[in-house]
Image (cartoon, rainbow, N blue to C red):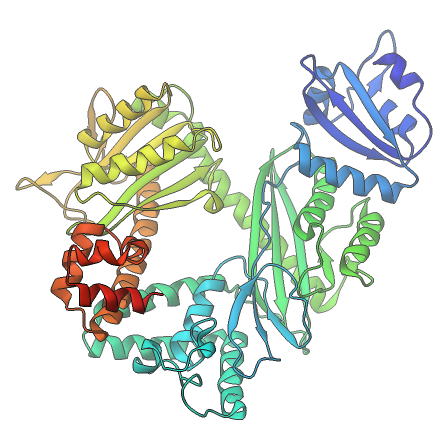
Length: 598
């Protein structure tokens, strides 16, 4: 490696460090390769890592045994190549946000006479497209609310038909497919929906009115679903007292550090209101990492495609690669990009708001991580390793109907929501349902490696099941379970009615409600339960709508039940042949069903 370092050219380029096994450790860029790479080393009395390096880079240099480099025409080209290679190769020591998703936008094509609101993550190549977003969370909830409250065309491609569908009968669509509805009348409905997108308080008020209506009609499941949606939409908006006195758009970035942890917060302001936010928490080193993280945060967030809405960028701090990143984003945006570090006024307040949120995230993350790091949970449960990544499982059903499984993930002190998974289940009893859920997760180990710990919502029977499945797969990870103690031979999930029990391979613990270890596991269990219940309710609502559609077309509820007992799901019914349905019901009923879902 020393000979390579000696012959490095004084030109722009990228450099790569490799370990003894040829594994890529780090990719960097340089305006001048020779001086940049030499800054990593001390050359006397022999080649060694520069003691002035931050701990992360110092450790990397001590592992490096070889160096490769690529010369390019300019520092700008070096930035583009570095960004591309880091995304593709994911080197061990580069700061990776591991957040490959792009955030969704709600859009509407106003060229269409009866336009629909839809979700996109890319620019739609058409004129007169209007975008709203981006939304880190809540886009689907807002979209569903628009179709709940406004008489929009509900089904894509429905205008090709000549007859009104079920949505017209449910008073959710004007049915322009069958009736003469003017485009002007429909545009007023679209404008009403746009108003709700831009004024969440008005949207939430309307949803609350609808929730009260459902309650008065004793449609309690629909009321509960709206209640949960209102809560999610409310949480998706960061309340700010900052008034810019104009309808400005900004993307705002701030990074804060505490110890070896760094938090990056993104706020999205549209028309003078902060509509959503997102964040990452990573383990890193010192101020040099903060400088690098601003660069990575912007490059990874905007990716290689023009976003539907291009907004000026505000950052809480300056960073060395800002001019390069600005030039690069100008190419992506197809217009001059703006990265500003505001020093006063309303814009300064915006970056300070982002900075405040980053500090709060670090404070919360540190307190949660401490619960793990003190090793008390590890010692109590006899775990093999300190659990950094945890998967928690729960199932939900109603008398075996609409059964679903859920997996939530807790990683390094925070819920990793992009790794959450949901499963439609065919099994009808709880044991078989958990077996189905865990078996499907194990099948994905090759693509998504197993965590440090599984937590099962259930007792010793489900704990033993999980251990058996893992052992049969040759996987050695810790498993614990949490359940309610039984009162009168029954488990009580309701809070306060019974104590939670922690189960390990060897014993069962009854801990005080104030015990931090128990509270930590309860927090994880409750998140899995929330996720499973939400999916179960959504599945039930979908099944209810599908049942209503069949009943409207002359298939009785008893016949629907007979079909579900045989086929398991509506999807299986739809994909079956007319002959298969006729073997359960009459030929006439089979013809009706197949005609309905052609």
